[in-house]
Image 1 (cartoon, rainbow, N blue to C red):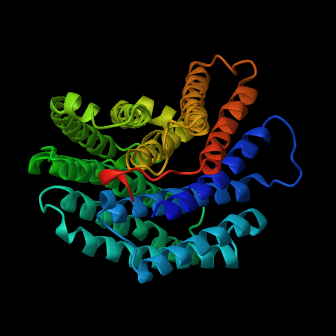
Image 2 (image 1 turned 60 degrees about the vertical axis):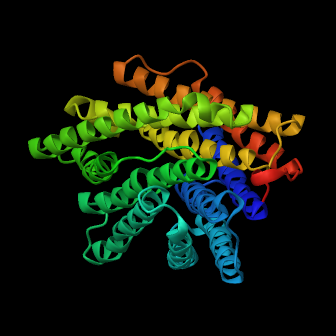
Length: 404
């Protein structure tokens, strides 16, 4: 199981290297890079290669109680082959025959793999991790409607129109705010169930999270359609989301001291970063309920990229690595592992601070920070450097329930 997690982490390494190169483009010309196609290669490899495969492996691992059947291994192999094809084809051709075919194959295989996870979760508590995991998978299915709509939209000659961007945002919204968000909660709830903690969200809190996840899609529409009804929907959505967050936080605080003792030190750090990122995500979306802030948030690219990376890196990447450390896939008594984690976390936090700080300066009309793109390139380079150290460090199997 840990071998497949490392393969997923290889995808993060590739995405991180491309991301760092895309930062360098703002400093000096790199003749071999066409920005938009390479950006597609970066985003697809990170989202579909690292996060999707990483989350799937963690859910299937189930704290050492799960396993990989021959069919699941073949599905993972096919998914990784599709990711490799996207990694190569997007920089070369952008959206072309190979990249579109690979994306389609990945989508089909992803549904097949989620079917296995759905059945595996049948043994989990119905009102706990099973419900959260299945909501996550339902949100994944819902997100794909945005992708499926793109073909007809293009056929009708509407590419470049608002509806085209709404369909892309539909996919991204329900990936970040649905599939990954509920998967993160399912991973945490399942850990609590295995270790004997009472960490079960009540029905109202789960309902609030689901309804707010659906309604906050209005945020993606607000920037191009600033209708009062849209902002009214956004206001309701963020209020429900804030209510759900407060209820969840109160429950987590009751178990803080007990859970703290169960995690290795570096796992605590990573979980802390994940929880702060999740809280910041709720606060940022609440702020965007203000019309003037919404326009600012969606028109300043630094804010958009900062928010995306807050979800993918600040929340999901740190959470998955915390899981890997907790279950002995890496042991932090090794200097190379600690150095890799330090560089990765420093890169995540540093790049987030730089993106949001520069975005705020743009909004205030104060221009560019001196050396901003150099600083951003360095922060971005820290992340693949940290991942490379983790991959170079040999894992050591731990004893007890953490072993896999």
